[in-house]
Image (cartoon, rainbow, N blue to C red; front, side, top):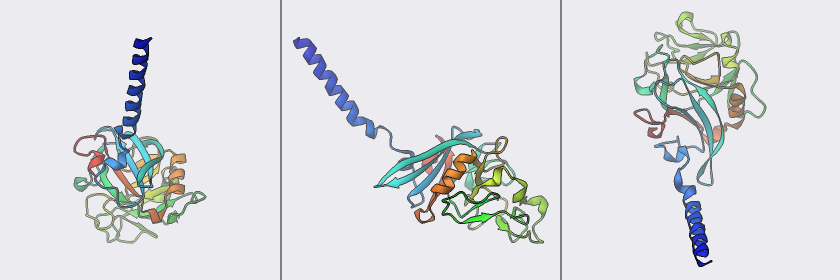
Length: 234
């Protein structure tokens, strides 16, 4: 009986120790990142390796000083994987890694009920200019300006599935560098990997638009689980 009692006490003590350690075992991903943009909302898009075309997208809220997971979904990346945003080249089918703001939302369909983000409806004359020679490089244009070649740009209405709902990712947006890339969005899945954007199922995209609050300064961090493009670097 004495042996059983001692064993039971040791087991109970072990459980208490394990229970105490568990909450601190692995901090939430945003808490392990170098920067989260300064707001209280964050989207993380993580791929296993730089050559991956799929991964996981998660959206988070910072509540009472702690990051809390709100939702997650499977994600797709560029057909040629991911590359450091600062060294990315246009037309390479790669998704840029890094931390970016989310300037505005847009869509061919109306904004989901509850959307607070600035939401631009797509019209027949809505284009995203990707012509390096244009003054409107990496900008929404309506209509398409004469110096922006259609062959070097996207008519947004031509992608009814992908651009049903979307958020502009602020890659190369504030001060565009010619040749680095244009038109990088978070949008609805198409048939497969993207041309450099991040995509998720439609229900996830609608949920993100309902969740995103401009006053909470949401950002998106894109990266891999480890290596030179590890998401924790951003």
